[in-house]
Amino acid sequence: MNDTPAPNTKKPDNQKLEIGDDLPDFILPMMEASRQFIQNEHNLFARLKTFRPTRIMRGQADFSITVPADFSEGASASGERVIHGGIFTILLDTILAYTVWTRLDQFMPIATINLKTDYLGHAEPEQAIKVMAHCEGIADDVAFCSGKAVCAETGDVIALAEGTFMVGTKGRSSASRL
Image 1 (cartoon, rainbow, N blue to C red):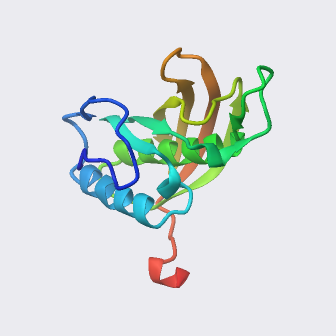
Image 2 (image 1 turned 90 degrees about the vertical axis):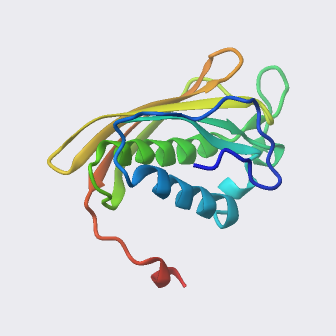
Image 3 (image 1 turned 60 degrees about the horizontal axis):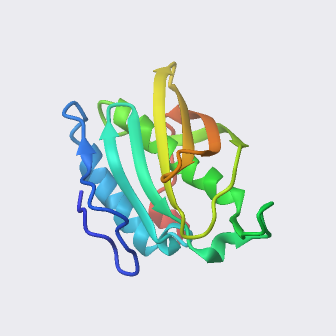
């Protein structure tokens, strides 16, 4: 995967991508294609300051993320504007899905069946966030995943998520979206 930030993004640190040696062959090319789509076409992800994988292992994915102020709302108890919680639901859903693919031996489409997100804290705009996710296992074509978003500086938990994903779904072709 290309470690160069996309235009209009800044790289928060010099951390290299840690890649597991037992990943299926399709993972890195799929992630590169995903990165291109996310940074160029997806309205939410294209606006993030950073959305960069830092660790991809079998059943695990960690990302470094910085969310700009235009995704903020209201104020926290300290009076600071905070990032809307829905952003973390979308980010966790996406990164949990990545962990499912790292568990598979061949590429298969997946779909979110259920996603539960609990908010324990908040993040301020431009704050460095780490998202860490795990695919616990796959049984009868259903993947079980968990993850969390934390403040990169303090480790304070912002959100926890648990999700299930159907493996092997038949999706529409990208041409059907036109």
